[in-house]
Image (cartoon, rainbow, N blue to C red; front, side, top):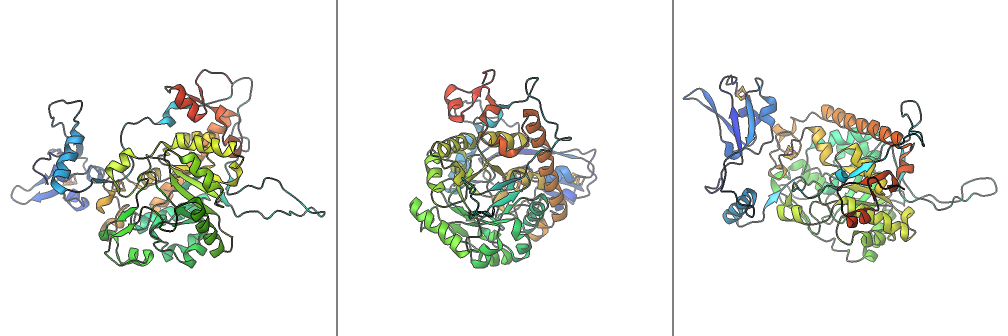
Length: 502
Ligand code: SF4
Ligand code: SF4
C-alpha cells in the first residue's frame, strides 16, 4: 500500500458488541480483519477495505460499520481527493487505472428527468388486477405484410424470433468474469421467467446446455468458446461489437480468473490472460458485419436470430441504420453507464453517451428510414428499475437488458472490486471458497422475485397510462414528459416538457 495513499474507508468496530468470534476474519477475502493473540482482540486494517459490506452484514452482533474516511485534504474545487488518489496510484504503478461496474460519476441521468403519464377523467386507466395486461412480446424482424394462399395458409416465411414473457433480459456476463453459481442462478431464473440470459464472451459451460432455449450466446472479437455446438445450443446469437462500459476497446480477463473449468469453456490455456482485441479482425465495414451475420445464420440453418451489440457512441443512429440493413434481427445498445467486470477507469468514466439519448435517436432514425421493423432494439447500460424499463420502451426500445440490477439481486454491494477476483459475495470470483458463498438456489429465487416485481410494476404503470400491452407502449413518447432539461435535450429525446399539452 502506498505511503501517499490514506485509507478511503474506515472500519469501525464496537468494542462493546464484538464477541471476538473471528467470523469477519474468515469472511473477508481482502484480509482486513485479523485476531491479535496478544490482546485477545480483533484488529482491522482499513487500508485494505473495499467497502463490500460482507463483514458488516455477516457480523452476528452488528458490531461493525464501514464509514467513508473523514480524513481531509485542504479544500480544493479543482483537485478532488479522488483525482489526487488516482495520481498517487499511477505514480506508483506506472499503469492504467482499472475499475469495475459502471461509471459512478454524477453526470445527468435522463431517466430521472423523464416523467410517465397517467390517465385522468377523459381516458380511463386499466386495472391490471382485473383486466388483461400483456407483457409478452417477440423480438426479431417483423413481417410488413401477412400474405395467405387461397386456403388461408400463411405464405410468408417468418424470421426466427425470441419470445419473452416480460420485456427484461439478463445482459452479457461471461463465465470467468462471474462465477459458475452466478451463471447457474441467471440461467435458471431466465428459464422460469420466460426470458434469456447471455453467456458474454466466455463460452457456454456444458452443464448449462440444458438451458439452451433461454440462452443467448455471444460471438466477440476473441471468439472464445465459439464452435458449432455452442451456436446450435443457443436461442439466439449476439455479435458483440462494443460495450457501454468500455467502447472502442477489447476485453481483458486476468489469468488468475482462468481456472481449469473456465479455460475449458473458453477453449484457452489455463492461467493465461484472456485478451479480446478492440476490433473483430474480419470486420471493418457494415458489409463485413453482414458477412458474419450471414455466416452465423448459415451455420445454424437460419434458425437463430442474430443480435448485434454496440456501445452508445456519437454516431450510434447511423451505425444502427447500417446494422438494420446487415441482416441482423436485433440491435442491443449499451449506454455509457453500463457495468463491467473490468475496465480502464478513464474509458469507463469518459467514453460513450447516455443510453437514453442514443436509444431515442436510433429509434427515430430507423423510423424515418422506414426500417424500424427490420430489427428489435434492446436497451441496456444502467437500467435500474421497472420505471426505467417503461421509459426505455416509450423512447423506442422493445426490451431492456439488465446486468448490474441482476447482480445486486444476487447480493452484489457495488464495491467495484470485481477485477480483483476476490468478490466476497461469490459473484465476480473463481475462488472456490468464495464461489460457494452464492447459493444458486437462493440466487435464482431472488432474480425471479426481482423481475416478477418489476413485471407487476410495469403492468401498473401501463394500466395507469391506459395502455394494455408492451407493444402499444413501444415508441409512444407522448407518454413521457421531461423536467429539468434543455430544449436541445428534449428535442434529442423527442419528448415534450412537463406541462406541455399534446
Ligand atoms: S464478526 Fe463481529 S463479533 Fe465477530 S469478531 Fe468480527 S466484529 Fe467481532
Ligand atoms: S460483484 Fe462482487 S466484487 Fe463486483 S462490485 Fe459486486 S460485490 Fe463487489
